[in-house]
Length: 260
Ligand code: ADP
Ligand code: MG
Image 1 (spheres, rainbow, N blue to C red):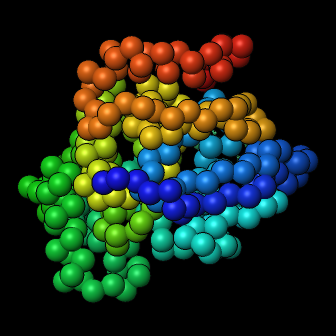
Image 2 (image 1 turned 60 degrees about the horizontal axis):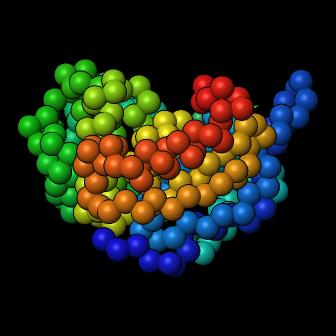
């Protein structure tokens, strides 16, 4: 789906300083940034630079210390239903079936169970989990559980999906497959995605634009357009443009000995 130039997430002077008993922890310097509708925006940066903090503020789970975040034009002051969130761990409830886990946002929001139940089944099919709807999380591999958690984030049809290192706990091969899968889902649904990672190849593979963050307190070190055609296959990683961009991004971190 083509992306527009209509802003959907706008950050103006957004910063975060955690106030703790041991003093203030400045985590994010003021950030100005706009994400457009349908865009796949990936944030990459070293551990502790404020990536999760930024995502939580966009989700409305954490108030900024300064500045303002608007999602679809509205200032965010509390958690809101316009986003679906995927965390590093799938966080599925073990006593619920896969289908029932995916349906949780529908229950929480009191949406029509028939309408959205149908949608849950469609998503599970799209994620290759059609035959696992009645299984329990422990009967699924880590990659399958994470795919189920992505279905859960999409079931209520949010325009925006926020993903915080969702594939960080997976082995390298599963992770690559998930990247291909996620690209396919995003293209099929036209969602706006804000995706966080500390893997540079993952960032370049997925992104329309990559935002590179500096060390804590984080700030925007650079923003790169990824000009690689879609759909991208894993072979794109051998493309000279892919190699050049990953190198360029890596150079931001050489002085500190790389990421993590
Ligand atoms: P990242 O996701 O990039 O690894 P985080 O956003 O989780 O980084 O954290 C950024 C910085 O803020 C870190 O240095 C961390 O120690 C600090 N931090 C995060 N959460 C809290 C908190 N609740 N209280 C105090 N400091 C925090
Ligand atoms: Mg984090």
